[in-house]
Image (cartoon, rainbow, N blue to C red; front, side, top):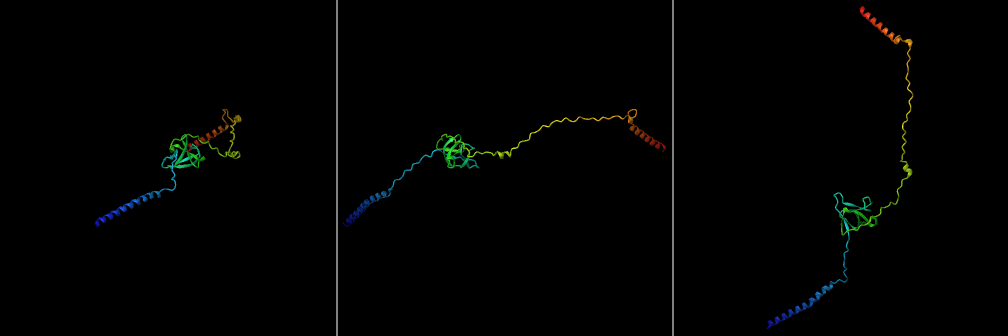
Length: 209
């Protein structure tokens, strides 16, 4: 009898405990989500398409940058550089040149050579190149200063021909008084006779010995 009462008390206690637990759990479960409800609205983030842009291609081992110019020409003024892998928004193209956004360029834009970059994000429209810049000051040369470096060569005079004086040929006159009958000079005859006499004297001396 006592055993049945004890069982009845235990079963009643267990049933009461289960009833209390069932009544408490829904309140706890409902309190949790309410405590986590945000008090303000969460903004929705939407992405805007970037549009066309260029990336600098990999160059040679010695080159790691490309030139950025004010116009679509290698002769245009250089306004900056872009490094390998650097990106820039593309606005248009003219021939083989691409117009990009460049803050330090004229009107916030500049040009890069198309073969040195890769285009992403779509095609580019054709644009007109900027007008050729006119220098603020026109360079002039001071005529007085320039005249100091200009020389006028003297006129070359051709040689003139002067008629030489007439050639005078000396003439010799034959002195008849100093020549022999055959026209031989007397001096030569005297010298010849003297030499003959000396020769004969020498022969006589040799013979006398």
